[in-house]
Structure formats: C-alpha cells, structure tokens
Length: 248
Image 1: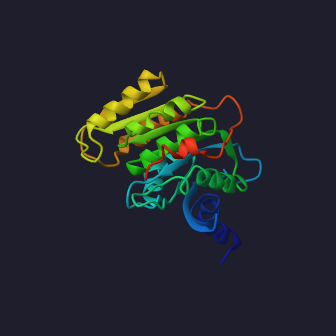
Image 2: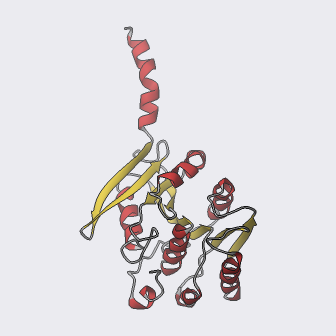
Image 3: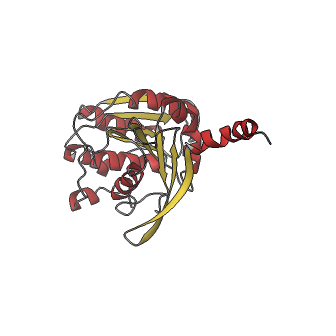
C-alpha cells in the first residue's frame, strides 16, 4: 500500500485519539468510584488553552453516561470538559460520600492531564442529581462558579444553607409544569427562598412531565458560560453544620 494512502487512512484515527470519551474508575476513601469523562479535541494536549468544566449529576437509576450523551455535541462545539460521576445513594446521591470531596477529587485527576479552567467549574444536575447539584454548589460556593438544575428542588429544611454560604452562587433553575416527582409547589418554594435572599437566579418553566429536556442543555450553558469566579477557587471540607442539611 502506498505510504500516502496509509497516512490518509490513519487520519480519522489520529483525530479521534485527540478526544477523550471514556469511563474511568478509581478509589476514594477506600470506596470504588466511577465517572465518565468527555474532553474535546486538543483540550488535553501540551499548551492547550484551559477549558471550562461541567460536572454532571444524573437522576435516580442513572450512571452519568446518559448526561454526557446529552451534552457531548454542545461540549465539542463550545470546548467544554464534561465530568459525570456515578452516585452511590439509594436515589443517586448522598453526602458526604458523593460530594463535594468526590467532585474535587475527580477535577484534580482530570486537571493532571487536561487543561482545566479552575475559575469555570459548574455543577449541573437533573432530578435527584439536581438536588445534589444544589447541595454541592451552595456548600462550595467559592469553588464552583455557578450551578444549573433541572426538575429538582431544595427541601424547606435546606433553605438555611442559603444563609450559611459565603457566596451567593449564580443559579439557572428550570422546572417542568407537569412534574409529579417535584411538584410545582416545591419549585415555587425553592425559587422564593432564593429570591428572598437576593441570590442571582434565572428561573424557567417548561411544559411537560418529569424528564430530561434537551432545551435545558443549551439554555443552561448560555447562562453558565457567563459566570466565572473572580478569584482562584477555594474548597472547604464539609463541617457538621453543612451535613445537617444533607439529603438522606
């Protein structure tokens, strides 16, 4: 086979090799963990420009893979690194074993091989993963730049977290009008709690039942990409006052 033809046949494989799209396993505090990683073309090459990171949190019964699928096309276009851990709680996620130490650990792993913009880390979640995204974003408001939540809510006993947070983290919050898992009264109460405390909030309602809506991906990113920490991220391990507000 002519060398030029062999080189031409190898081009697609070379281009694909520059993109990371895989499942990974590691151990955290003696417990086996899994996360899915998507890093767009050239974001993990020497000298690459730092890319924003979206940490995706799946709903009950998920693994993270499906949310990477929902965001992959946009991530290629916008050059976003996607990280989607798998939760271990009975409904998906339970602090402290599922965060926020988990999220920090994974970000640090990925940052060892890819160019990560530490001031543009975003917590995103759907359903029970949205509950968890609320929790990790509020408890680590100086670590995450912003959060985006779909079809989830804060519990009334968690409203006090908003008064503990050292920073009012910007939130994009989308709810479904016919959601029976998270009825509108819960969404309205969550929105009211945020508004009463003057948190930066973009709230949107969409028709339909409890499900992942494709419109969320584009609208959430439109909001998130405008948010950036003014200083380097600060991570503070959870204390008892935060664990009191964790979901069980």
